[in-house]
Image 1 (spheres, rainbow, N blue to C red):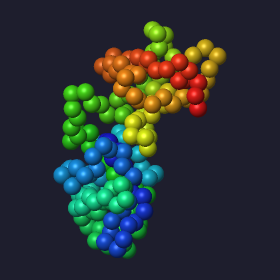
Image 2 (image 1 turned 180 degrees about the vertical axis):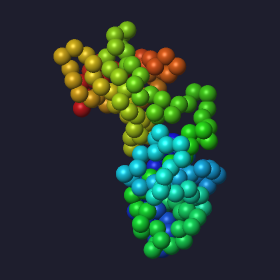
Image 3 (image 1 turned 30 degrees about the vertical axis):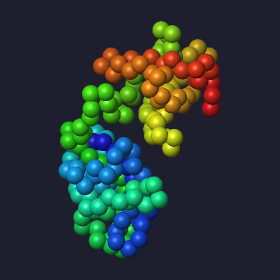
Image 4 (image 1 turned 135 degrees about the horizontal axis):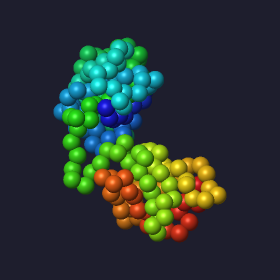
Length: 180
């Protein structure tokens, strides 16, 4: 399953939540089928059919509140009904997701080798959205004498991506891996 975002806090009296979105277009949520709400302790990434307390749901409303999406769900009519779901995650089956020709899912990057100048310098641990509007590539540093994780922004001009071969070429500015 794909993680779409988290329900931040309850907003207003009509059962709406501020939504911390991990997707590019949260306004598409009402048209999506197969959505699942799950507590933050449940990782549904590998789940085929979620177990309770996770529950199937349908988004009835998406609106914007000061540049942040708010969502409301069928069956959660008011603030009292919404409170127990604060902090829960919204998931969808990957099979129901669509992506364009040059698009990928974040989880497809995990484990890919990162190369600079033909040398393997790291391995992707995860991709996460950044407030600046691009994803951050977190990689395990495999350079000799180095250890730990490094974050590099996914700026398209810096990266050549071959997910089929799990090969990512990074051509960023000098010293990009040494900034933290």
